[in-house]
Length: 264
Image (tube, rainbow, N blue to C red; front, top):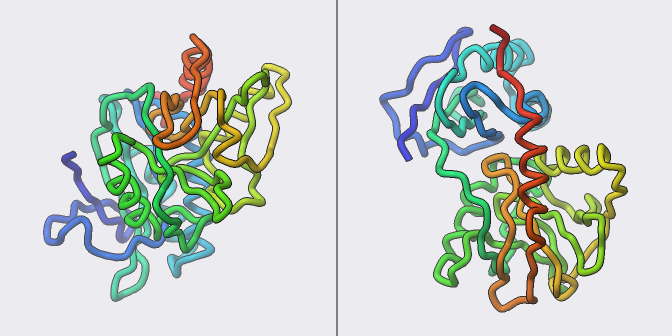
């Protein structure tokens, strides 16, 4: 996937042509899908990035504020994109970057498998664990899976490598989420789904679940890139089901929450 990397310095973005875009330790990152100038929950993504940068880097408040203010005007007006905001460690201190990436094609379903281990060092922070989490996907790919599901020592569900979980247990009419007492990333798309549920008068459940509790359940894999993907099977795991039309209905409501990144 071709991309252009920009560094933010002295109040403006400059393309980086002199270094490998993968160089530098990622301290904080955040991504969102941009479709013809529209984004779902852009403000939430910017707030999460801002809070993480402020708490975990030496970027000054003035630089961070200027970066966040400049982002909406720098985003493309047309096309399908998956931009990434980054704070990267450099010899002179943390540096803010913007990575412009074309978005891959939409996906609606996938196969999941248990992650072979849990490599996370910072389960509540998006950025420093991204490479280790990507490696989990690579490890389960030979099994035919597109997402690795992190589990606890007793086979409890936590989250996907690059996603969070939303589960419709067999016989339930309301969704279940993994509680935040089980450390995992506070997903923006998960928060949007909770709001959609509330708009329908559904009181969601927050429960810790074992993999075995998924027997007969419908499992949704949530991310800012695809919204909702429904898991059609769990490798070496329980039998999953798919309720016709339910994913499409909720996906449409999620997409309807997209807003222009700038006026005019």
